[in-house]
Length: 437
Image 1 (cartoon, rainbow, N blue to C red):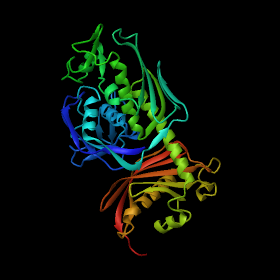
Image 2 (cartoon, one colour):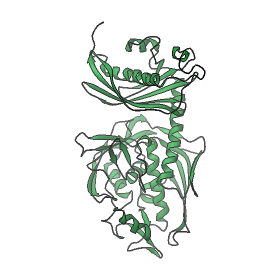
Image 3 (cartoon, rainbow, N blue to C red):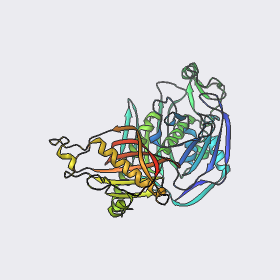
Image 4 (cartoon, rainbow, N blue to C red):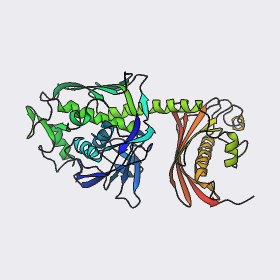
């Protein structure tokens, strides 16, 4: 149950599935607890994007893509399927373009490359999420559910019903046990498929113009066009591969059961978002029960703020200078409630932003404590208030350091009440020399 990475670097080249542009992808080993991270090496400043549900790019038809602002990496589901299918937790994936190489439209090229690189055990414990509460999402007749299971694996039951669309595909049902059954042999070789009408529409939209029916699994009335099936039920096997890839966005090794009926990327993503909410809620509850990393005395040594402007009560967790989690207990005794909607007390949004800024200051102080510098607020971007915060609520403030350079610091912040997002913002600081008062 240890985390895993790969032993050596390995690369894959080829045209991208949708755009046809030649790209190169390089798998590299990564440290424990870093997760799956993509890097766009073709940018002036290489852009790092974690493969998490928080970075999902919306409205992407027939594929899974991630983004960070204006930088995107698309069609990553087969790469993620290979990584997750082999039980790899931490890996760096460098790419010199926007879309990964398409290979043969299956996860096999990536699975083969990773197996060639070798799997390396790491000392850190694997991050596992055990499903204990049923979760289901649906859209029309399609449905996907996460259910409690038994044992140290993930059971997947996929029901692919094309009966009304294509007799050559029909209805296919398959059960697969992830982390126990052979993903490389049973699931990875299964290719993407389209019906003939879908394939014509696909290319009419400018996608996959370099592909022919020999490069892709195109299904006609009597079977595949100019091609042969690798499995009699290759279609449902590929749907499972896509699902395994999308589940990697959770950032946890999942245990339980997944039951899917006619599900695709959109529903898969919705389920992963629901699971991510459960992960966050459970981890916050666990953090509240642990001894705090910093109590109020340590916080007051790091922050110059005092009553009534000290907004952090406890620091639950600090991961070096990369990530921190703090607590603000919202009491009716806060002085601002006397004049801010006194008949219906709501915490001012500016105070929530201040709490996030102070937690960011604590995180940055891990690097600045011995440099003689302090972090001074420079700007706030993408600030959004998502729900009101009232007396009795407990704000859990999560802060991630995006960039810390010699003169500036940049943090991504979220304030949660239970499983609900209350506010979020990106906060930039100027690092200035500390001067005695």
